[in-house]
Each structure stands twice: as C-alpha cells, then as structure tokens.
Image (cartoon, rainbow, N blue to C red):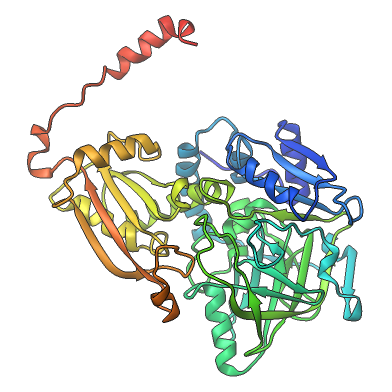
Length: 482
C-alpha cells in the first residue's frame, strides 16, 4: 500500500490525531509524580489516547508535555497509512515503502530560519530547567528530558551526519548527561572525538514530529543520514536550520533543541533509569556530559515524552512495527526464501522475542532463518529468543507463537544456542561480575518450532475448523455471539 504522510511537524500531527478523537488534555498534573504515573497507565493500553499535559504546576501555561503518541489509529497516521490497517498490515506495508525510501533518499534542505528559532537562549541565560521535565520513574537518578528525542552528531573522519535516539538526563541548568550503548553510531562518533582529544558537537532535539523520531530509532546503515531517509519516505526534503554553535542540521520546525559540546573525559554521575527492558538494568555510573551553549524553542513548546516502561508499552509498540519490517528485509537480503511473517514482540521490548514464519523449502531452512534473524542488523543488538514457525502461524499473535513453540519443538533437539552475542548493560540477566568487566554480551536461543522437514507431511493434523466454514458461520450467526 502506498504511503501518504500528510503532516510535516509535530503540531500538524497533533491536529490530525485530535480530529481522530485520539487526543486528550490534562491540566495541573505534577512533574514530580503524576505525569510519570499517568503515562505508565496510558502506555499499557494500546487503545489509550495520546495526552498533552498543560499548566504543569511551577511552569507557564503552554509549556506542554506530549505522551503516548504511538498507539491506536495514530500509529498508522504516523507512517502514512489508513487508520483501519492492522499492525501486521502496517508493518508489511511499511517494509515496501521503507525499502523504496532507502533506495531513493532525499537530502535534507538547509533553510535560513524556522519556528525553532522563535526563542534563542544563550550564555548566562541558558537554563534547561525551564521546561516541565517529568520524573518518569520513582527510582530514576534524575529528570530525563530526553526520552522521545534524538541526538545529531557528525563522524569526524568521514563527515556524515547521524541521527540516533539516546536518553538525556538533566544534570543542572547548563549541563545534560547522556548514555549511549557501545556499538551505536553516536557512541562510535563520541569515541572518535575522545581518541582525538577533541570536543564533540552535539544537537539534541527534544520535540519533533513522530516520523522523524521513529526513523531515528531505526537501524540505518553507517554512513547514511536518517534525515535523507525521512525526506524520501515523506517524498519531500526535511527542512533544516543549522545550529548556531555546531553547524549541525536541526529540523526547522522542531519544538525544543539544546546544542553544545562534549569535552573529552568530562563526566558526571548518570542514572539509573528505568529502561526499555522494564528494569533498572544498570546502576548509576559516570557518563559524558554536554555543556549547553544554546537552547532553541518554539512559542508554547511541546516536550515529547516516550519513557520506557515495563513492556508492552508505547516504546515497544512503535519499535515492533519498524523492527519487524527491518528484520524481514534483512532476511530477504540474506537470501532466505519464503519468509511469510516476522514480528518483534512488544512483550520482549521489540527485541528479545522475535517470531519468524516461513514456508519450508529445504532441510535446514528453519535454522538458517533463525540464525540470521538473531544476528542481522535489525536483530543483533540485545536479542534473546528467536522462534521459527511454519507459515500457518500468525507470529504476531503471542498465543499462536507460544502454542507453536511448545507443541512443535523438542527441547533437546530444536534449540540452538549462540554464545557471546551483542547485548547491553541494560540487559537485567547479565550477572554483576560480567557487567563490572564491561562484558555486555548474552546468549541467544534459536527455537525451531517448525514441523520437522523430513516428516512434516506425517505430522499430526491440527484440529481446527475450515476457515471458510468459520467465515460462513460468522456471517450467518455472528450477531448472536456479540
């Protein structure tokens, strides 16, 4: 299905979801406790509306926080598809459109000015505490202004611009800390500057349209600027202004942006933070800090909140659609035939449980699909379980996936284990001793839940009614079942 992204800014998007009846406004909720608690409630119901918090006590009216943007019909709107498509239909439709966007790419367009420059704060006036940043989880080490955000950095050797999503904690009025997992492009850039003994320029965008945020969350190959993929997907270039101190590109209609530099070796305590696993996967530790040189924001700015919660939640819902599509594409590019479905399950944070459905074509087909899904670009980081099933299983349905796993696999012969795989300090199952040694690796289980190829035709038949009979019965008697 052809995409049609009809919004360009966060405010355009807010107007559209309001027209769909999927936006609410809550006034006078406290940043200390109530916004975080209500956000947790909202995120655990995929049909809950998006909410704008306004008139936060202690802050001016109009300084707002938007949460739960991804859910309900609005997740389809974000990616440019009709509101009535299922999540699997959206993911499959997104895959084709995403492939086209990656192949075409539309470079971002630099413009002189934009709404983000309506307010420019520099020098002694810099104060990042002017925004109503919530305390998202009661055990957090501080207030995280960057959750529904992205960072803009530039490779000092190759000159390409990366747009990536990394958490951002307020240290004080003029400094923020940010954690980046090893192997991420922003971390590689930061390490290069550190090795050179040079300060790294950074722009942090704290409120942008949801498509830009989602693409920034995606696994884009090294050397490619996410802005160019966004422009191609939207079929028009992303308009950017240049940061006045770093020269880095900033979406011209961004809501809130902070700009500054990271000095080599300069750190402050950061964390802990309730992460996408639903745990405090790592204790607080020293992390680099950015000295803020400028703050830019629109009048009546909107801070976007997308705090991780115990899965499933908004964070995992949004990533499930994108990551499922990317893993399916990776499998195709690796030459795995007849992949009928992929789903990175929300309950696993859209990383740690992946279902793959195939139509078996040869012995070893299932193991091939499972191993590649576990180690491809979309699945390699922080995965844990890959379950491969036959094509009759809807792998996006957790009940169907688990049923196939328990009834079609044999524990002694159906499970392969990969050791020393790429994971993260946020993985709560990594022992403290390993984390102390900076060994952030884990194992992967590849579970072959397909009917054994050599005797699949002799496998017991499933006792289900004929699908056409079910359809006819529903048409005739369905009204009595409601």
